[in-house]
Image (cartoon, rainbow over all chains, first blue to last red; front, top):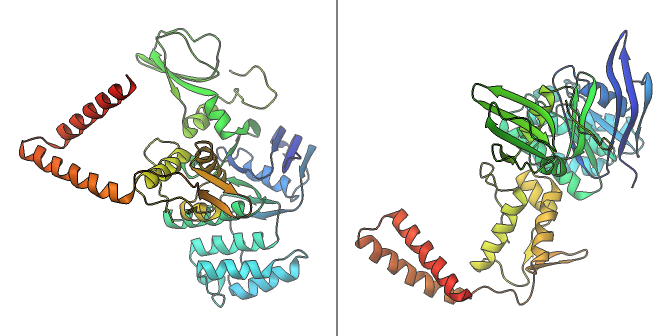
Length: 282
Length: 130
């Protein structure tokens, strides 16, 4: 099946420095992909390239069908009412499902006659996502959709996105700083670090394929697995490894959490877990 | 209809939590043959989880023979899947309540009760297997 989003050797340069280097990934259709990485890792750049807001210097990025993008600053005109914002969207787009948008807003209890500037942060996020969904995209790209929202609003936004994914074949790419926000909602993980792709894969497969090992600090690194990252503090050593099992009884093994997996890779920028890479590790 | 909930701190995989809740509801007679499970959309709109998680739970329940998917209609509890009847439940529960009162009167605390119950349960299943 054709991936919903595919990048091949993608490179993006701002003036002299590379914001994204040699990035190749494919997100299958119908997935909810989490895009994580520290500030300046290239997350927004990758999103902008995916939706055609900037032209790559190298390689290519392709979306199967239509993409809709919701920028982090939730670009609504404060002086427009919600109804005016919808009317504007209808005029600006050839593919437009105004009824679905009106339905969504009614269900969310967002008043159409309210000015965008008078809405709460959660309501603004919902209106911005409603506008993007009204374009009936195949790929919905959300830059930090949960930033600056209180826990209730975060939950409401994720509920709305998940419902849309359940309804039809929609692929979602969303970035966040907070891995725990993504735990229950995302099934694909993309980790960017300093402009390079470190991880791209199915979250369940990734979690099943990694172990956290703890043991005495002088225990030699286990054979037969790739060490993603390690920390040795005092008498104890902790490793994140790919592969397993580990027969050496001095190592106690357990499954990695999503957070441990992400942090393990981010702390070891030379490690990568990418499809098609046999050997992995620092 | 069953209303799912999530215990995010439990460490139990989300799809398994859904599976357990359906099994539990069947045991307690809250779900009966022919009852429909909520659609994936209804579940995710309530819990904010990935729809594939719900589908995975339903596949597992289908695999166990507890529910069946009817194309275009939804997922239903299968005919012939029946735990003890509600009347049995009520009767057994009364008996258990009386036993708990008696045990408390004898000075057993919550943990003693649990330990005793699990031991008897384990012995009974051993005898059943022999």
